[in-house]
Image 1 (cartoon, rainbow, N blue to C red):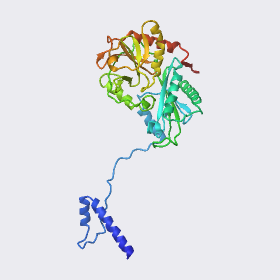
Image 2 (cartoon, rainbow, N blue to C red):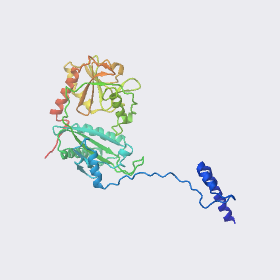
Image 3 (tube, helix red, strand yellow):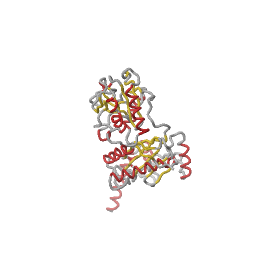
Length: 384
């Protein structure tokens, strides 16, 4: 009897809960299925979740998948080569240039990247970029993918990058490389992931700066600045960088200019800013809360002769108030080793006389000469 009473009580409670959560229609159905004597009919209605009747997505074979992917990628950039440390080799078929979906570079953006340039079959500024890359990896707490020390890892990365460029066969290219905590799972912590290193070579028609570079009109972007840790670490998370460029582009600009809460110029979306002030000093903001641009550092070094020539009165790295910068004689942005562009309008106001200035042209000449004839920032590559 005790068991029968407990079972009846449990059934009554379950029925009460079902009645409380049922829709009016289902309650009406349940009532209709009850006899006049209060006894339940054997065909009482059951509540069910709605069924999704959708067309099935095709499950593709590896062959069909690659065929469809090849079609989907038509018209997009076709990298010349990619190295993947997970397989320890280089591929030149763009359809095979992929990383695991559960790589934390994708899952959490837990990865860093950097670049270098191939000009005339020589690697340019690779060591400067690798030093910054390994510093970024350390800030991001990414284990070294190679060797037992930073120097051993740097040497292996340098060798892999050179071999990947040679395998591509191209002599004018942009190179990007990524270090990730690697694939493993979809969690937030990277423990259990395998650090990975990827290299991509993208052929470019010309990798030399030009005095005839079209001038830019730029706009101040109403986009939050990154916190200092992210701003000084070259991570894969470029969302705010993209929004900065889009903000300027929407108004007819190109890359956008960021100004901090104190009214000082920070940086552009992917470039550093340089100004020729009214006293003819070449000035760029400090790297305290922005990325330490390798290109702008080289420009400051190569521009020293312009002080001796009297073209510039000095070279300085200091805070630049946006209000003062808008009254400068010349403005330019620089990044990616070889990309230097004059800015002749900022927020619809002309910079200087609104024309490309002489300092920009001389800087381009000096950088171009260094790229073509220099040796200290270069590596010859052993093409077959």
